Image (cartoon, rainbow, N blue to C red; front, side, top):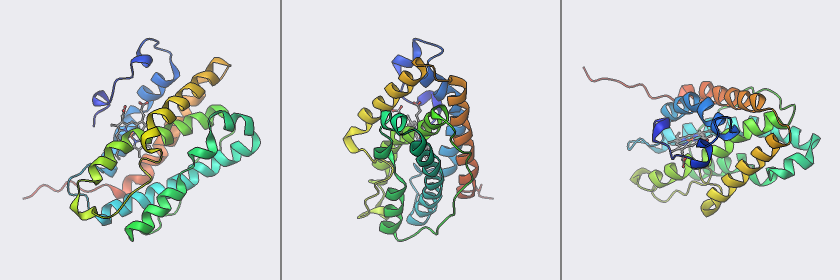
Length: 212
Ligand code: HEM
């Protein structure tokens, strides 16, 4: 899905400096790279390829949450403002891998430390935004005979509260900026997080073989 095809966020459009708008435009290329590499909307997706993608995502989430847990331990009030404990998700990927019965452990990538709330919100943007695409992915998985009987939970961790959780994240991020947060630091943390994810997922890319 090209960035332009994604749902228009009316409230981002009124203000060119809006942090959520800058996050979306500033990471669109990295998002497209990840989406293309994982190719989870492929009608030929099978258990082995889904397992490989989930194993990579599991490793990435472990690393990403480790940094956020350290930030939350240092700044518990700021972490509570964004409801951090409820947003942890690495365990859901582990459960999905068990349910699928496939997907070798992929290890964990190296991510930068999370020194402050600017960097935490940039990283959280990447993790939380994935629940939006996750609802499309879930719907697609439900149509694949190869996955019948398997319930995958990590893509849509909030079920019918996806919109509410995303709206709350956006409110908390804007409130942080209004209180003096640094937009450039937030956006560069998001880009760094996304770029690490794109590089980490590269082994999952299917080669586009053209028949002779
Ligand atoms: C692999 C298949 C993926 C597909 C098909 C996909 C698709 C989408 C779609 C359709 C949206 C827009 C939804 C809406 O606006 O209502 C979206 C948003 C988003 N996705 Fe993905 N996505 C994928 C993977 C990921 C991954 C792995 C991440 C990060 C871990 C991610 C992060 C985001 C973010 C941050 C947004 C929010 C953009 C914004 O509106 O600010 N996506 N995705």
